[in-house]
Amino acid sequence: MSNYSIKTISENYKMTAYGVSLEDYNDWAGNAAKTAAKKAEITENNKLAELLALADGQEYQINYVIDGKAWRGFGVMGEFDAEGADVLDFLAGDYLVVPGTSADKDRLADEITGKVFGGMLQGITDYKYVGPGNSTFVKTADNGEFYGEMWLRVKKVEG
Image 1 (cartoon, rainbow, N blue to C red):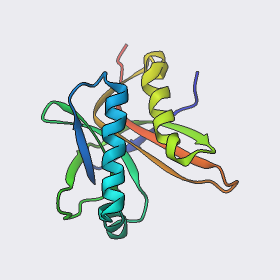
Image 2: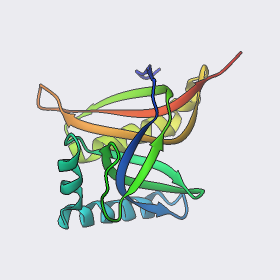
Image 3: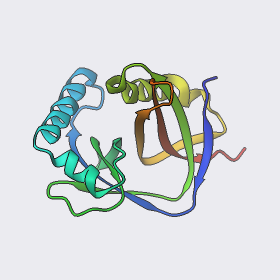
Image 4: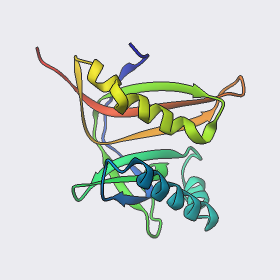
């Protein structure tokens, strides 16, 4: 079984992010292209840098559901007034925390996401994912590798 832990967040919190709606959740290649294009756009126009400067500088890749559609974006912890950005609600409760490491910073968040949704969640029988979203951060570890964590709100399965 993959490495994970359960952490409890005692208060609701918000994240502010720029993202795109994904029409077909199973169109992996198309969604990756849309997400990469959005990341390139907000990097080139400095919107992401401006958002990072308002917060603590830690960037998150965020998956969420907005108006019943899958949504993926990039943003920060906290609520900020940034033109064109969405403010997302994350609820208090138990969170499944899945760590990962890689030499490739740009791929790590997607690698952890793939691991979690590619089978790991199905193998965890005492908790179930309840959303409405999840977030992943990546930072440089002391050894020069990259370290990341995905946080998903879960509920203990009564049994």
